[in-house]
Image (cartoon, rainbow, N blue to C red; front, side, top):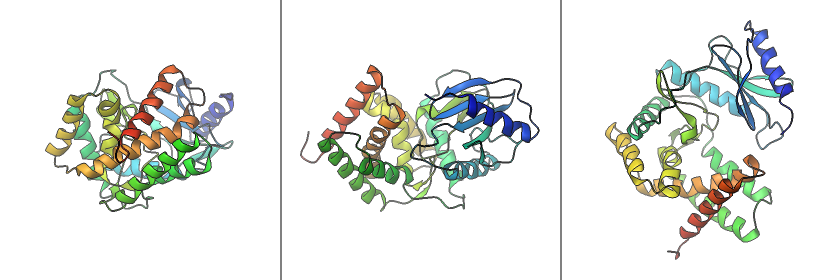
Length: 292
């Protein structure tokens, strides 16, 4: 991992330029995105992987627009910091945006609350009028598989085939703005309640994509069907409608998307990550026609 000194400097200088003096530098996350707490209320997210698949500030611009819309409508999300323009900002070559610090309670979220708050976000997202790409992370992942030599040829061919088929089917589903990457790591149980975060992958697609994303590990890796049932039941009980065929295609597509990003996000995976990757690959084999 390259030195983090320059992206830290970039974030601090951007904060200072807008009248906020950083009084600390707590590293909350150090990966392709660097997350820093710079003051009592200010959190910076800085893209370190400036040469990765995503260039420029387009993704942050969409995230900021969605976050502003949801905050203004009272959605359960972590808001952008009000002390700086929403941006996105770029300094010393690093794209970044700035968020309000929230206090985590380290309490596992109730599955029913996950389903309820996701449906609440989906309802409020319907009125978002900004442009969004269709099935963005799916088509992006398909491009990654086709242009990067990430896996053995037969594995690549199967992944491309399965994701292409899922995309074709999901194009026929009703679309609306989505979170885009609604996994458990993008939820925080806080003193302000259960809040969603990290809207960088927002796009237009079927609501089943977000549901598949949040239940995938529980359903496939953990076989925790009670948690899955509670999430889906709460979503339905608060007014949501779920198409089981689209949900199944989203589960397949979600698996391929996660696999396609593995070599990028985890170039040197530990044994646990390698095992999870293999389980995802094994599960996808069972979804081939004629395989049981």
